[in-house]
Length: 381
Ligand SMILES: Cc1cc2nc3c(=O)[nH]c(=O)nc-3n(C[C@H](O)[C@H](O)[C@H](O)COP(=O)(O)OP(=O)(O)OC[C@H]3O[C@@H](n4cnc5c(N)ncnc54)[C@H](O)[C@@H]3O)c2cc1C
Image 1: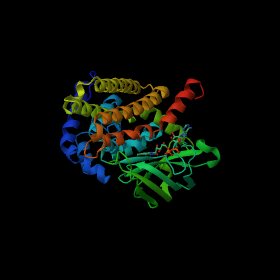
Image 2: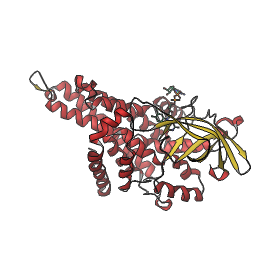
Image 3: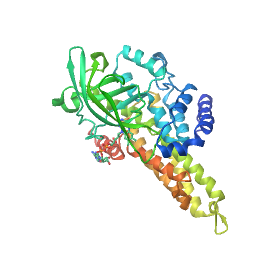
Image 4: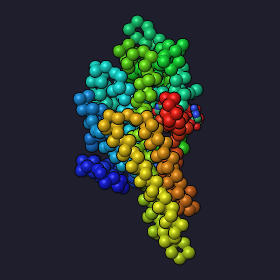
């Protein structure tokens, strides 16, 4: 379990509540959900009913208004049980974040309330031809009187199939490249919105990921977030703030892997003794513990900066990149300690490895993080 010694009593109580609930409601069934690639939405909603709806929406807009450090602890605790389930939970408010940064007071009040009432809100940036290169947006939004008409294709939309609302990037002026990108709120029930295929993924299989087709979708002009052409800037600002905590679930996955590896090393016998007695295994465990502590400290530091209103791109990218890669390494070492059973689907390690793989791919791959870090260091960003 999480070993942050600086946790407040409230944080400890929340984390304990998460573990108590998921141990009973999720752990016994998770292998089946993973196999089927489905998210138990009823269980997600039950967990949220315990006080976790809209946790990152400020109280004045109807949410629970938790600080980033507390959200980090909560996500880590959920992912200890299942990273895909945690992704479903965490992405509830993904599409809201640009509204908080650039939306009108009216939008914040209206949509904050919808989230608090139980809506799910996806963020749709990625398109078939461009993920990392998010400025290469082919979805078009054309003004028509008091409406915009939006046409295009989005893919890899987290919660795409279960969302009530979508925030999409769309170009209002293709001649201006990324400076022509704008952000729009789309209600799922709007004619022309089609949820496409669900990705059959390697890991986080309990997280719903779909395509989204937009076929001449008409939205009122009041659904524009910020001014025309400011969408890309808002997205970059948003990612600098969300990256540190976006990777918090990775810590939960690594902690689970380490806990399992320690338990296994105490009971698995080889050459007449528990493998945990062997220095070769102890050194592996020591390396895993060191890496995990570094990840926890770095994440706590990054979260505390955001809680103080300090948005440091360098810290965000370093945290995202380091934690996601270290966590995969920890899971691979734990799998190694499990030997052949680490490779078997009947044992938990292979799932943790599959789940851990995602963190260095989404929300800006490791290569993109290094690109940002390098450019920042030489003063080009
Ligand atoms: C499970 C899952 C959930 C997702 N959820 C969402 C979501 O909710 N909303 C959303 O909008 N998107 C989402 N994504 C998309 C995700 O953010 C992209 O997959 C990711 O940004 C990478 O984009 P890409 O797949 O197009 O790869 P590409 O951008 O095509 O990159 C291919 C490879 O080239 C590397 N590369 C690209 N550019 C550079 C460069 N300049 N320098 C060095 N290397 C480079 C990349 O790192 C990668 O290794 C999700 C993806 C997955 C897998």
